[in-house]
Amino acid sequence: MKLLLDIALTHIKGRLRQTVLSVIGVMTGVGFSIALASLMTGSQQDFIDRIVNSSPHVVVKDEYRNPPRQPVERHYQNGAVSLSGVKPKEELRGIRNPKPHVVSLNGIPGVAAAPNLRGEVVMRYGGKDVSAALVGIEPKLERRVSEIEEDLTAGFLDDLYTVANGVILGRGLADKLGVEIGSTLSASSPAGVLLKMKVVGIFHTGIIAMDQAQGYALLKRVQVLLDRPNVVNAIHLRLKDATRAQGMARRIEARMGYRAESWQEANQGVLEVFKIRNIIIYTTVSSILIVAAFGIFNIVSTITFEKVRDIAILKSIGFEERDIRRLFLFEGLMMGCIGTILGWVLGYVLYRLLGAVRVEVAMFTEWTRLPVLFSLTHYLIAGAAAIIAATVAGYLPARKAARLNPVDIIRGTT
Image 1: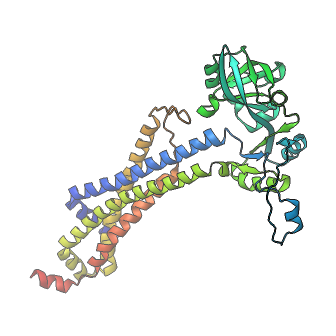
Image 2: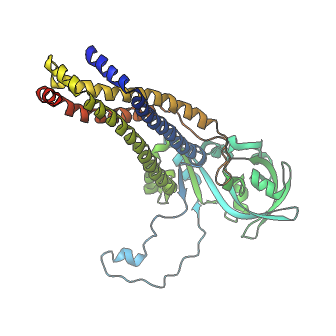
Image 3: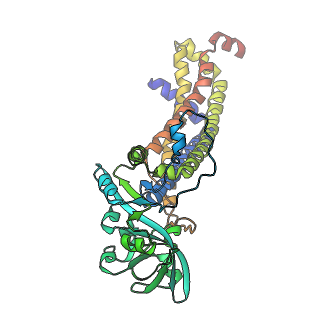
């Protein structure tokens, strides 16, 4: 085995320039695949942290997934029934008397639930009118299902209890109105109710849509403002294990009847985009590794062609076909392994450089740095792909070399 390795190393050194180019090809493929995977998974994790973790894992809404069947349809279940001109019932929409539901959901292990009432209001301050979404919450329950308390840059969440008609505004919304802590503004709803509200807090999530158009107030105050007593339009749930959200949503929907939407369902379109992007990136990286493998194939094939006399001599002194096959296979593996190790180093360097890049995206979220994620899995996958490509590239000419007949080689050279 040691002799085969020495011979393989001698062959590689004999074509040093081509060997270096092939190793660089493998190194580039491995390094860039690690960097792209780090950036790709980092951006996905950043999305989950910023969007998913800042919102509930499951939302129980005041609607039904399928409309309720009319009495005549229920009575004639298997009959040919045509229904037209049905007048909708005029009733207050929402989850009525939500407290028993919230208590029941909070009793499920690993689940925290909080009621929400969201409505559109017009806020006025100093002659400025701004349309905003006002969310009614119970602070002691809301802090268990959202990160609103961590996002506060001024004031305290419990001030909603102590200050009459207190309101917490997003940083962008506060800037639009020109208000600060202690300012008093007026809020009017489509129900015709007007309330004077005092700003007790400012929050900043980094999600532009929330920061510029959303505020929080005590649930009972919002119910009065929207004229919806003892009614909420959503119950937010947060799970210890967010991956259980889909199964939990199905259980709750079957239990309560109301539509329960998991974060996976709510963000289905974005998650599908991630899958498509993953396919594109891995296809690109695989192309780089395949090109590098062709470089190894070219070198081993050239060495095989140039060393036919050496092969004849080795076979004539007792080397078997499997020894010749191993010899040229070792040459491909050497270049693959060296390129993989150097590619790991390049990948880590690129990972550090990408993580140091400062950017700002003022559309959906605000990033201060490119989101990258370090994972040993990226290194193992890239290394395994490179070594497999190098093995295949070395095996094909190695098999051809092992089948050469020493007698035919000597006759041909003479």
